[in-house]
Figure 1: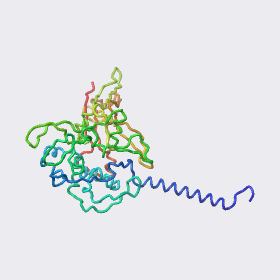
Figure 2: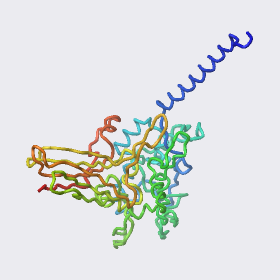
Figure 3: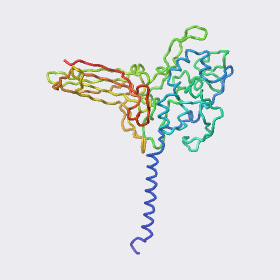
Figure 4: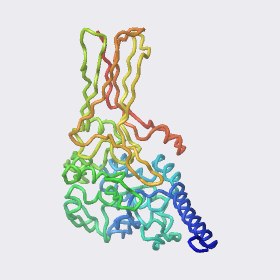
Length: 395
């Protein structure tokens, strides 16, 4: 028909529209229900680390190292590294998110710590490994998590910062132990250069947070402080601690923050204002850092002489991320190095009952209660702890 549409044209348009709609729906369904990957799989942790037992040793277990390095082994046993696999929160969270093999390359990094061998990958992003049962799997070694051999054995040689000679085993000095971060990078320098990730900083981006202020990351400076230890010969000497304290340690977090409570508004009228000034004075990365679940909870309470609540205000300093359908930062109120956050609390003295005290608290949270319930984590340890508390009597 001249100047019009043939019957087939309308059918073709409907077919194209249906196909485009189907592709669009399928794409968003995949983004809304499929696995979430916020990081790029770098070469350093694409596959588990294979290690050869050094000459003079019988195994790569920390128990073997402890025969001579007893003090260091005791420190390591108290660390998050030694509990990288056993940690109940990691186990629950890992299973909830699909129990992907790639996570094990940092939590149980050695080949013999994993039930399966990684033969290759089915995709360019290395997130779909080809696996087969590992005949050399050692379940006891797996329990050691990030064990001594992960950092200190390479090519059948013990590597470290000095290369001090010993008849017990071959030793080699390695510059990665003296540059402040070389050994840490394998698991702690996460990159988010993926097509579905639209963030300036990758989640768990400790290195990126330090680089944004123009500094070079020096993890050892804070997380491996110098301590006095006893050598195998019975002499005292100074060596870096192997405890790696961080967000799970109250004193470590407290030492990173300077917190002041100030009265900012007081006069003849009934209005009052108190403010918390929270400054990151001790950490070149943001506080909190690491997993985005971590946060600072700031709570003000106004109470009467019998400690009955009159008014309450709670705020969070945290990183909030939209995970689906794309990964995007919604907001980030965490505290950069030398940066101060001010949180104010206003109230009137003309209340019934009469206000008697202002209470201000700052708590460090490892995860929110809503997330704990969502993943089904039955915690034996608290998921948050107080790093600052002050109670002030009102005149």
